[in-house]
Amino acid sequence: MFIRNSAKVILPSVFVVVLTASVFGQAASRPAQASTDAPLTITLQDALERARANSVPFHAALTDHGVARQDKVQARAALLPSVNFTNTATYTQGNGTSSGVFLANNGVHEYLSQADVHEAFTFAGLSDLKRTGALEAVAKAKAEIAARGLVVTVVQSYYGLVASQRKYANTQQAATEAQHFLELSRKLEKGGEVAHSDVIKAQIQAQDRQRDLREAQLAMEKSRLELAVLLFPNFTENFTVVDDLDLAPPLRSFDDILVPGRKGTLTCGLPLLPSGLPDMRCSQRGRVIFQVSPWITSTELTLPTLHYTRPSRIPSRLRISSA
Image (cartoon, rainbow, N blue to C red; front, side, top):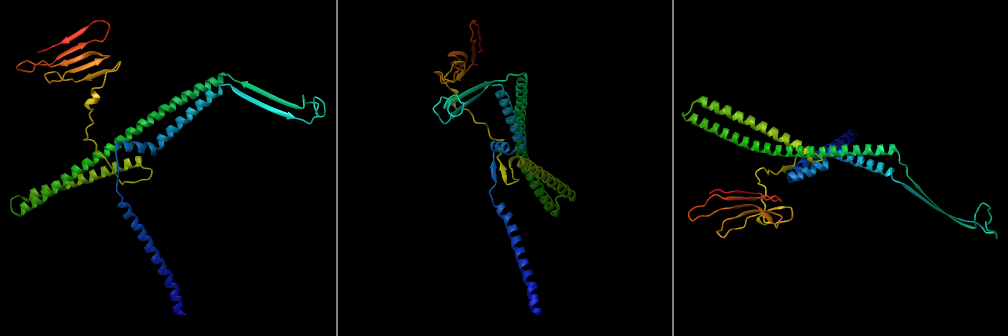
């Protein structure tokens, strides 16, 4: 009897231990699985698109603008005329007379069509139209302000994270060099080449660099959190940003510069002279109004000559030349 009772007590406890171990095993495996995912690479354009898609104040401003625009449409539609058209057919039992069984009918088969055109033109309707128009303009301005403010916030957070990452990398390098200098000072002290005070100075410098490193890491994590709140509906820090501060803007190709001249546009080109040097010409409406040509002598290259022609009916020419 005692053995059976002990078995009844031991079996539930074993089941609880196994269940607890399985739950903790699943909880421990989830972070390991999440950490193995590749980080998401985000550019500035991706950040702006994600912020526009996930920003609650921005969507609220857009919703208010849409509601105000529909109120204006409804107020304008209330001033337009309305048309009502009714078509009826009445069939009664014939009894040989022109009116049929019922005396109120005009005939056995009666067809009736009625149309009503109504328009209410009131001062209240005009005032509602002006009021809704003003509210729509205010909502549009608020939506534009929200869009611009979102762009400014995202750009500041994005490049703030880029700058903090650069600062962290520089601080980390400085901390590594300070630690290396400390180890070198200790070795020199053991050899009797430097005093103990120099080792203490190197140690203080290394501690300062480590403190700067922790502060830079804290600033970088703070910038990452601020940007993550703007970009993702579900909080995550598994992303990286593209450092494009050193990337130069793309230059226009030579074919894009030498476009054919159109009416009312200013076109510049760089044709080559027979001497092989470029000749800068800008034309408008098929007329050359700006030209810079270098003059070549037999021994040296002189300064360029500037020709300018004002494109107007009054003949006026400006010629500046220097040798």
